[in-house]
Image (cartoon, rainbow, N blue to C red; front, top):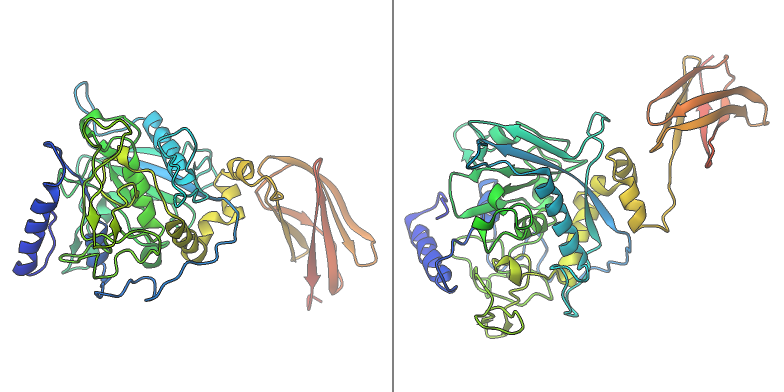
Length: 447
């Protein structure tokens, strides 16, 4: 049962909903839920019935003509509190890598994987995930951080309304990388000590770059088939779902507020996802020959799209992001999370090679930004690998002022002495074995 601080009438509605909705699936299965709606509510996000915020009423599909594959540098913080011969809340590096694989299969609609579907409305989002290989300090990394914590491995999602302090920060403060540069994933032992919560996230327009930004997933539901006790939610789709929220997707019935009916309250505001009323836990139909899943008829208009990753279906039933969902996610990236996919950030987080494998037509736009201060030429190169370079500074007449060989230039600032220069424009040229890069600098008012 979710704990939400609201009036007694609404508490009754929660209890009624939880009972009636969970009885629609066969068998004695624990159905973990997503706290997205609760977390947005606690941070002041108010849903007005009939208003499909954060998109305006009458939201229409965007013209997503950008063919670029967006690569998301990712860091996974595994916060665990027990490890012995019998039980552990830690997860292995292999499990983390399997989760990244699942994300790329699901967001890529990759053929011959569980993330593939043959529906015409199911599309490749052109969003991919990359475990960072360079940390915020420029050091090599696996993109995986294991942190033992006796007290805070189980995250507390509540806000202390008296002090305004986010209790979840006790856990997230244990390990956090710059949210403007990395997708932070916290894998935890539990959320609020509950057994029926799988994770949560925040909308991009509400949280991008803030210290609580990122997704939280309970270890039982993280990775592909790592924890069989979490069946039927053990295929890694919890992270797929939470990343959808991270890129501004709702649940298909809407922002998930108490008593909301998605048939009348605007739903998820996506033009090509069928309307639905409340959470539904679809599972495969018994003795089915085509692996079909239970599909109710809802809102007097259409069959429910139980294959939608943003629904609560069993993992084996989910395999669809629609075109409308894709347009919204990519719009959220361009609008709120552009720093993540900026090429400079791709290089400095160690995801360049993966990016170029997806975007082969995009040239490697390395830059050499220069300046001259106090008779010193400062060059700020951006090379993924060390390059032996020849550095030349010339005036506008082509006269050489500095000409020097510099070995193993990479991403560190290069400072070279220069003689006193007259006011005017100068050209810096850096030549390597593979290319030549130029930049202009202007000297004004120095003498």
